[in-house]
Image (tube, rainbow, N blue to C red):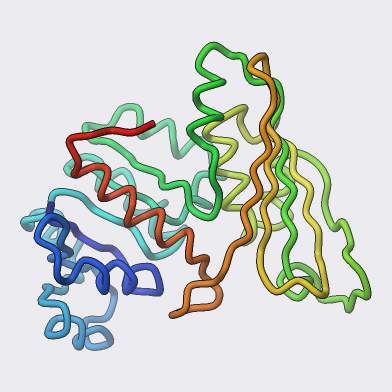
Length: 252
């Protein structure tokens, strides 16, 4: 599978590093704004750099992986899906639910990795026959990433639905968005956000209830070594999603 990458930040370079020696998954082309800034990647990873979207899409790629930012997704999503399948990492773009409506009319498929959380398969399974009653996300993060005030103890800084959470903390709600898309939607998914002055990592606790029973999932996210602002699990979820697309065996 030849992969076209949009953006070359932390997750993009993680993917480059871990597909370099592979024959089944290979990043062949990268779309960037400034070629000179990323010229070193051409030789290091044997890739071609593009600045023009149409030329990039018309190259020898099988799928496009976005590893840039929310604005890139909003700008390029429709054009990319007209000609190629696409995997989107910047899930925050879908806080605008109208963006997904354009996908249903596209010729190609959109893939959304699970990112920094687990249990999406369970949520979707339960929701198949509308047997899902509630999805509640409690996220604890280092206080400095959420509030400017100095705190002496863990403090609940938000409690409400995912839609409100996204509006108030747009850069911290990727997990609530992907949970909402898998389950009850952003207006019915409950979110509790805790700022902890002693926390050193992000912790996501998900509780799911329905006719099946109930489930709880807790994920403590270590940062990516290459970039402490990026979850290692989020990067791994992208690589794993690409591997599954290229496999003849589908699990889950």
